[in-house]
Length: 189
Image (cartoon, rainbow, N blue to C red; front, side, top):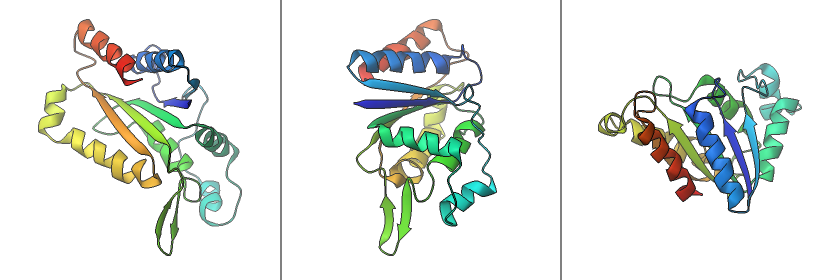
């Protein structure tokens, strides 16, 4: 399997990065070919500009940074998105990556008969770290809301079979809690 890992965290020593490292290790051990994209280290520009719109809807060229990421998605059978939850949402860097890369004409297209899901047959896992305890996000239905965003509104909309994992209380929780989360990754891959 060809596995693409894309993550967003500005601290290269964050727990988010520890999850990425564990995913890469587990996936490689399972015999998969793995590529990792650190959106911060490559200097990905998350801000959509007019050339993005021209590429999507006006017959223009897709910007080269977007095209490079789309080629990786095309290459991959499976991908993992890894990011922290900030103010109940994915960071702007990850949101901008999705806005620009999972573009109309590449990841999906509207047709007379509905949506053409251009990434059908691919699968993904989304790993979300957050500071609040899982119980809080379960009680407030935040987990359900985030699952709906990815299952129906982003990856699922493009035809990707998606599985989401939440890791709560990361900042204030114990080392044992975080070690348990990392051990969970080996079971996932």
